Image (cartoon, rainbow, N blue to C red; front, side, top):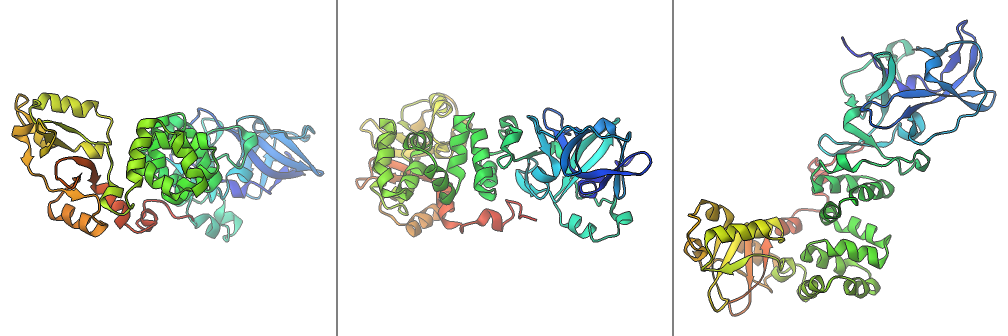
Length: 420
């Protein structure tokens, strides 16, 4: 049986009538309670009667009809409406507002809110983000009352922002956000308003590692926007959980007077790595590289090398390749993680490694870096010192792509949903 939908826009601003059809007031809004239900139940109506906003429990509503709402009885309780914790006014708080759609991690605009009676209970069942609701309102009332066209998004997949409704005292649930990739969450933040973005960042703040991953995925403009609103201590906490190269990039964008105070608040090992990276131009191999990678003795058995990969705290993309060094500490070869997995576990790293891996130098510009990585199909390229003996860091292909892709490419290629 097809679900019969009632459009919110066809209910608000409609008269509330009694059993005899006499007008009692005008519906101002509908109230829903947000909680663990996948489809929030309606709890009542806000009705304007003789200049007063009154609350009518949903149990006193007989039906939603074209052009009016029918009330059970002849008298309305004259107590004023007061919003309670966990309640949303569907028209005021949600209509034409952003919602997070967790299917695909997109923002959608609720151009219509859809209601339905399910097992005897009125519920919020979906939202329509398309432009069709605006077109539908041009139709005669009898044609637009319950019409639908399949563009409705199930409410169970969505979550409202409440940054603009502090009295609702609601929060975006972290348990839903953590299902998304950090890049998807960052896309949501970038597509949202500043207040909405702050709400998302606050929600992921329950998980410091996820918060850092999301922050790294943000474009520089949004990173700076959030850092500016935080104290030096809060900013340092965020930077301390970022990869050193990403933290260094962000520090160079900060106002001059904040750079040193924030840098001095970072843990000493992180400070040392960032200060070394800051000595290079940001668009050279030295500025692009991360100082965290794996370089192990050539005599190490493959089984130990794989254990080292499992236990490493270096960025995952940086340990796709493991470098081999001789007894003097000089780099003599490299082996990809795939090559190591396929090798005999008793073989040594030196036996598996490819000798004299292609490399970069810290002062190479972006063009030279890209050419070398492209020519040799490198996803991880070591940056060697001038003596070709020691690795200073590694450049990963994602760092290069980030510089090569145009600003706003995610929106241009449809990763974020355009606003309706």
